[in-house]
Image (cartoon, rainbow, N blue to C red; front, side, top):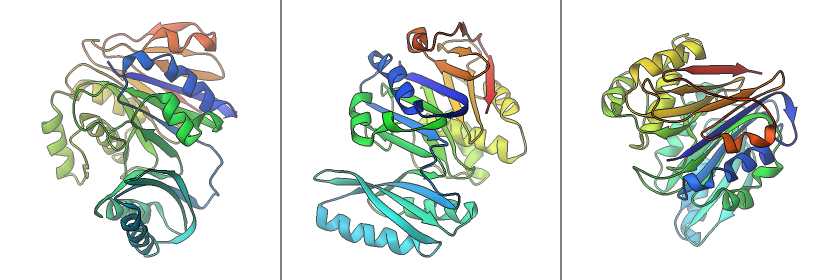
Length: 305
């Protein structure tokens, strides 16, 4: 039932965030449990900076000590350039930490270390940004200012929860820390989840939820780490993953879509020389004014900047 969207422009687009939000609003009927986006190429980061989006749980006084613990962990790896408070409630805070002076290998280790701290969740880590929360896309947009974000490409998700918790951490997109800036949004179920997960964990992939969507991003990241192209990874995913699904995967330079072998979940694409767009329903693509095409069962597509 979930709604998924993706869009990639060949050049920087100042309206990327607002276009993504409008596409997602048109799919709001597909779920009310959460919404999220991954934005690439926003130019909000310096060349040598990484962004960490962190959720800190607890009462205000407890959060102050937790943030100090987070800072102490970060400075083992690099330099804190800036900390912004994005959202705050009685029992949570969402912070954005800009970090310099570390490699991707160090960022990966840092993200896993932070994830292991009590009452800390890493919502995203890298040179891209993930914004996700419970509620409607309008609520998430108001909280994080997604509509004001520029960029080259992005993916979005409207959530109807069929498994796992209804909270901001279990909202999509999901990321794998083992491959730079890779994220996924998904509509459907992976019925051989546990078998696939066991194989990936044996190869060193670290799972933080029991959500089957996390399995997809680790699966594709694993293929890319082995030297496969994104096209080859998606072809393999269609073959190896069971169940009804359609998912959109994004990397720093690409966006791809894959549909299950039986074609049980909808996926449409639209493109011209400047833009490639994906959605669960044609209504989300209508404002772009492009001819749309339904993917066939087992079909996949990849588009690059």
